[in-house]
Image (cartoon, rainbow, N blue to C red; front, top):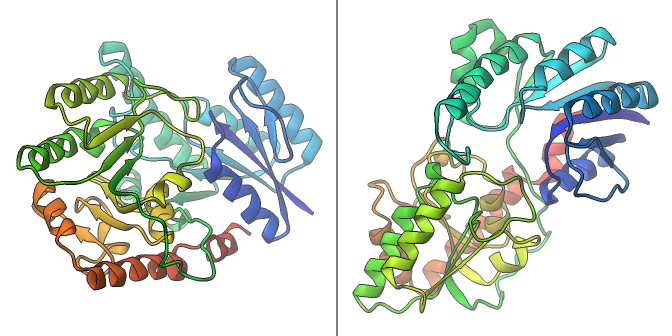
Length: 359
């Protein structure tokens, strides 16, 4: 069996179990070296720790142990460049996975703004550009990755494989979910997802005495035992806005939970007012369950959501109007959108088709 060694990941979540399973389905054993001390080792997961020297020692040891065909380097930290250089020294092909906005200098994930944080973000941009140059293959999951790579050097596009996120999808659509609420937001509460605008839209519903039930998951300032903490300043700011608007009778707020799929299935609509839409994991998971998305026209949105067919697009970024439109859908209109949401993921974003690109 071929081996692939996956490095640079600071936490382990369900989406990475998808990766392990996908590799196994095409005859490849994947081993994650997890940059954490807070996770138990199990098949496919080994602990590299949080200290840089320890991580690199574990990395070199694992290369010798597994003799991997590929090193899959996830670009979460400034160590990416070191991982790649070591792999090159061992003569192993490197596949570099872009995570999000690291080529754009995205600051929405930082916990505290300031000179040092800005310096780190800007340095990370330069290091990621070098990683892109050195890698044998670049996995790009978001549309803006391609334009950013072209700006570095147009010929680098030849190394790019567009590999959007994917999720498991049930063989049969379930149109009889037990629905207990209207709206759910389930992503990190960070600035690029404009959760403050969602709070304001919910507040307008409440002030106009419109009945609805909603939950927001993903406040780092409430709790996070699943992912690496990020965007704490913005999370606290939005939570303060929530408390100020007095909408707790209709809207609940939560930190991160381990199994969000159970929560997603309880709601009619999944809300993602983000700058980047394609291909958010929780968006894919919710649509695979038949939950109808309400989104901003963020980057790549048109590749996954068609307004009025399998979701609602707030083209003018007016979430209140989009929420009203959703609440006014007839049962038949909702059922059609729900089925189309499921079919979109099954046909184009299933883990089965995604795994074939990993060979």
